[in-house]
Length: 209
Image (cartoon, rainbow, N blue to C red; front, side, top):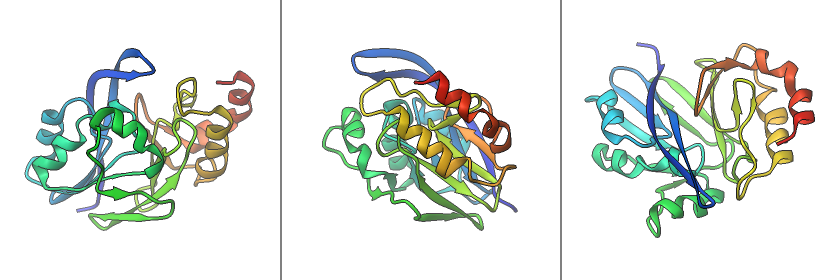
């Protein structure tokens, strides 16, 4: 059976810089009926584990270290005997949620993970956070962009460790250069495609952070 992407929507609180926001997150399961990779397990480990079912979890991947994308990671990993992967540049954000407990794997640009006959390649796409990454799988024609690129523009850059020129460079050089028909599965909200977002880059730059 071909690999597929399944969305689990969870809800909870995003906290940073002393503020709190109620948010809904897209948690992605990539795989088939036997094995999956879990991307960005936030808020509700029970709902995520229910969606996984009896499938093997090969690894838990985090697009970045903000609490709403990692605050169910340890529970999901423990329940499935899986390792957690995060880019090392986001360790300070991870530590805000987990203290001295560290992820198992350091993500690196160009590294890859295999599941159900397809490969997910790590693209370092900083800006929303220093260690933000996206996961591109040409086998499925999909990129999991975390909070780097959404339907309608870049992720937020008005908080600690974020930078607007950096996220614009990441989107221009790493994401908008992907095949135009690539589907963008973001960390929040609806899907889009590279072709739909590409014409709007100059608008985003003019709009600013």
